[in-house]
Length: 380
Image (cartoon, rainbow, N blue to C red; front, side):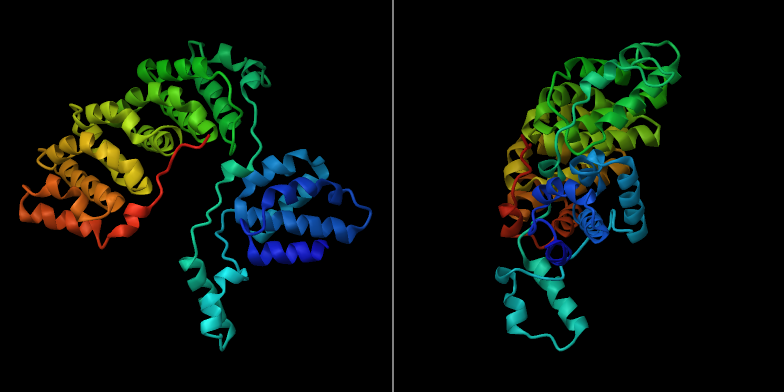
């Protein structure tokens, strides 16, 4: 039975073969008297790592194993190199076999090409690891002493910056899981906000922003209020000279937009950032919109466009060339998300021909496909 299960997992992959019930049922197999059963259970576990990633497999299975067995499986994962490598199914269920029936393969290479074609034409079945993982409770861990370091709540208030940095690193380690258990994170948010706004050490500021992004990724809509409260101060840090701080702002703000709230919830904060007195902050905010908006679809991007577009259009005449360039990209991003040039026509009609051409090139051949794209609604 395990041989058949392994063949299905390896060939069809996830989500065709649901990972969660299988991984939760495997632990007894690792204690089986028959070595071949134990080895096949390892093979199935390792193969799932290639489909859904190591963090989820850790959450569902590896963290519950004995240390010896866990070490064996981790060694096998490293040996195969599957972690982080995108997998493509080698077998297809019947509803996806239409292309193969129309054109029987003449060779193994042609068969592989057909499988890839069908995979590209099939509906997007990208697995959201958040849906698979068990939630992890971390708030109680913040009260515990870790080694020689004081507990988080004591360390975060220390005058010496290295204590605050270590406390934030501990929070990052705890929060860096696919799914966090909901709880009262309001005090954590207040501490993070204070550090972002007023800490004199750039390393601490960067780590505080990164921690906020990880909490947003693991809590999603359960972090909505906290994410909203952090948005303005985080966007303000786009002005920072530190590339690490700016990179962390992009990560955290993208997680907020993708997982915690709708774009319309923060239009005031975004408009303020688009009118920031520091050109770098304006440019990075436009870059954030350029990257995030196309992922939201018409339902996610369209309602915010009316409020944001005047400030973005204004930025196309900014004195700073980098701001102007990013403004063109942001307008094109809204066009891609909302169905093409027609959706942004009234905003660009008074622009000169050069800008219009750049925007048209950025939008590309989008028609109804983008309009039909689902909005990235925050997950519960």
